[in-house]
Length: 112
Image 1 (cartoon, rainbow, N blue to C red):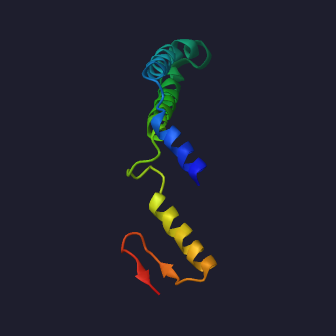
Image 2: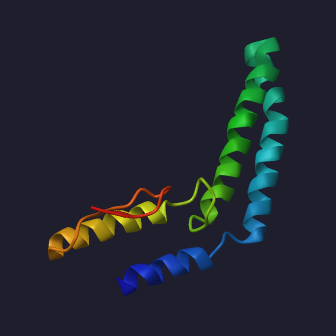
Image 3: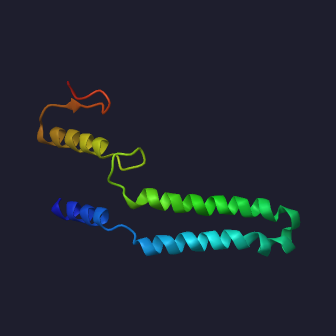
């Protein structure tokens, strides 16, 4: 358990360096800026539409990277630690022969 907690702490304390983020953003921006010029001879007037589509995908992936950089928060996209804790607690209580507790996360714990 201590090894798992230590690993999670290392993940939380090691963000992606700012310079990598800047390089990734500028590379995506430059690629998306030049993509229509590379596509214009092969697909003609559809080049801006296709380039816009790919630009949306690349910038969405960049935003996803930002969301995934810190998985240990309380935002909706973060890991559901409360649900994990409730599941582990119920399993341990069952294995140890204790009381069975069902705990809806939104309503609080109810003993059964």
